[in-house]
Length: 114
Image 1 (tube, one colour):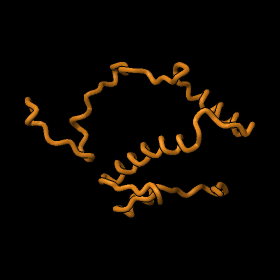
Image 2 (cartoon, helix red, strand yellow):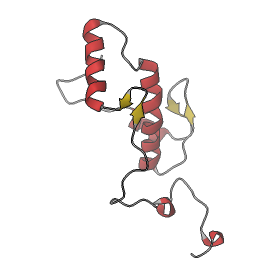
Image 3 (cartoon, one colour):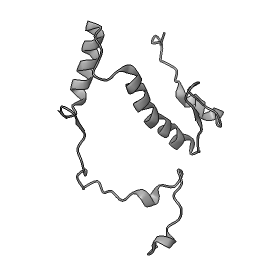
């Protein structure tokens, strides 16, 4: 495929043509926050400290939920290899019931949620 006309249209199911990165290349940019480089351990520590002190965390719960939801929904789309329509109000897929099974998981006994 030498010209742009030879490249097939991109779809969510076929990402072969988008793999232009190499494992040996360094990232084009490093993750940064307003206060410098992001440290996942410091973020986790802040979250745990906010639970103990009952003070707000650096990242509020809604922002954390919305920002992680997008990537988790993308993972479900990859697992089901389908185009998914998301109803944000009910937090369910409207066009694929099989994809809804990935929104929850069973805990191993004796662990449970709620």
